[in-house]
Amino acid sequence: MKSSIELTNQFSVKGLVSFYKKYELDIIRITNKYAQLDLSLYGAHVLSYIPNNADDLLWMSTLSDFENGKAIRGGIPLCFPWFGPHSTEAALPQHGFARLSIWNLEEVTQLNDDSTLIKLSLQSSAETKKYWPHDFHGELSVIVGNELQVNFTIKNEDTKTFKYTSALHSYLKVSDINEVAIEGLKNTDYYSGFGDIVQKQNSELLAITKEENRRYINTSATCVIQEHGNKKCIIVDKKGSRVTVVWNPWQETCKQIKDIDNDGYKSFVCVEAANYYDDYIELKPGAQHTLSTTIKLK
Ligand code: TA6
Image 1 (spheres, rainbow, N blue to C red):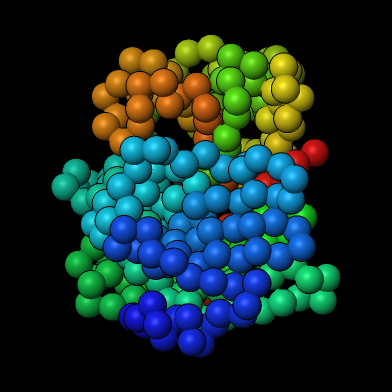
Image 2 (image 1 turned 90 degrees about the vertical axis):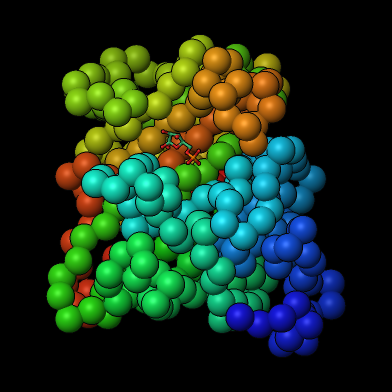
């Protein structure tokens, strides 16, 4: 792991790439002609994406921890190699270890259109094998342009086939959850919460009026998060994923989540690109898979 000074010496570019510490975590900040983005090396976690002349498209909890060993609440948590609780061992961390690991910064490159590419990596190690016994190489690449692109690639470097589930668990910032409608999931089957009954959304739009934890299956659709009152419209696209999760804890569950303030649920909705259920990823030795999401203003 590189120190803050080494990171600054190797990668900083005046006015474009800088580093700062958020409590004990190293954060890289990109400020280019399109947007400002903050990315934590801990968790390969996008914290914010603020297009020019616009508000942050991502929500971050005012009560989030920024500490080794704890998950960051908000932005884009990276869930790998399992989504949700571990299937057999309850003591293992929810959503896997990727969001609790320190990733290496490999590259920061200005692209031809002046957008900025950042690449982080996570290599399997004795530490990752405490949680998951496989050899793998993980890469998170982020492109900061007039849209935010996040690509998460896992390559199997083991001698055996392995399976995993994953998600880019994006928290989209809204000004009032009561004004939000999500478009793109009409006629799509979903499981609610941890249930096993398949339901179908018949309506064109999903309004969030109560706790929702919908896991839509067999969908690669683009979702549009519309806000009636303030007309903000966020487009969330994805690739390499057939499951979309929509989550908002609403009032009662929110009170039980200690790193979200009691009213926090009013300011975000999660729309997540996932590999889960039958869409788990199985990789032969040498094979790789990329899960991607793009987030932008309409
Ligand atoms: O994606 C929805 C979900 O899996 C919910 O079940 C809820 O637990 C949420 O993620 C947040 O999980 P976390 O471990 O970050 O508190």
